Amino acid sequence: MNTTTIEHFDDLLRIARAQPEPQRLLLVFASAGLPDQPSTRQQAQFAQAQGGTLEPLLCVDKKPAEIASFAALLEESHTLEAPLPQPWSLVFVAALGGVLHEEPSDAQVDAQLHRMVESIRGGMVNAYLPFNRQGQPVQLQPG
Image 1: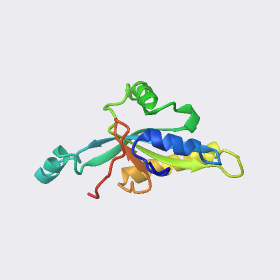
Image 2: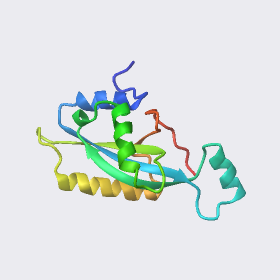
Image 3: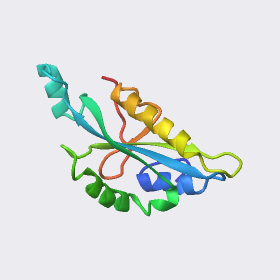
């Protein structure tokens, strides 16, 4: 396997841990659903796991060392999603690297997480890596 091939979330963890600069992984958990008053076509596409809307449910940042594996992240997410109206379908991931061996600041992390949430809400997700609940990357199709 090529060192940049990401076939599972755990591959991303391995790559992030190997970076020379400290990394923060930015995670936005989102649910997939239908818009209000969906058309018959939208309903049919959604039933085939194509199309739909994304609603960010929660976001968090983690150092790669704070995530033992996708299985551990999934387990932790069960606690985080308990008060939510629905479970998450996808987790979008971005990495924010440090500079000169300094971690990104909390302000930088917060600003980037806010941008991610707004981008996902607006359907602009190409800059992020989406994974399903099995830790597998997902190829999203434009609506």
